[in-house]
Image (cartoon, rainbow, N blue to C red; front, side, top):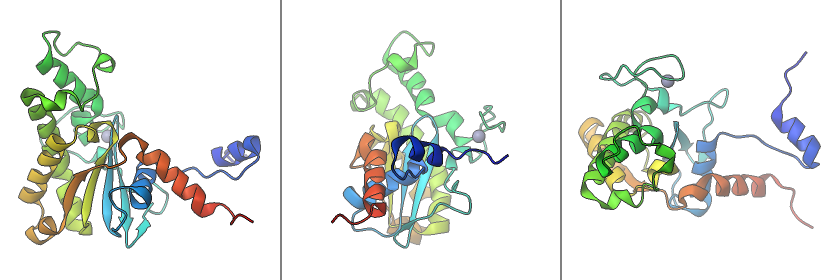
Length: 222
Ligand SMILES: [Zn+2]
């Protein structure tokens, strides 16, 4: 018996056509249509939250890969980590710099409560990023993500890296860390060509990407 497809079931219940897509791809489309990448045809959108995914826009089109799972950079292995990941491997990027891990580190730095503080009760990253000690934690996270992004810069030669998701809301300290690692580890010509910036649409990027996709797929009115 064939497995049910969520898009078919939702379409049946809503009475309208439904498409299902990857969240990082939708963030990339949002930035492409309405945000920081409106004039760009080659860029990477990074959704850094509980997981870390990259939406790839190559030659003006999102690139989903053969089965829709391109850009799973959260499971790139880091040399100096042995943390167990939800995928079963050890040392994956997202075990070190997921939003949960970064918030634990911020709790340790910002309060006397220590790392056992409930990470969900902490403020958004935009506020603590203004304090030097917290900014250092976030810049370190950016450096770690930048290690992986430097390899993508070598492979894909993007014009921009746009940092989104909950961690992307930290803004400049995160951008500075990513920039540092890209400059250090990517080939100079590729590093020189790429601009690193925070998402313009922030938490709305994925939603607006879905809006852009629906507008493109909807039949012309009238
Ligand atoms: Zn993993």
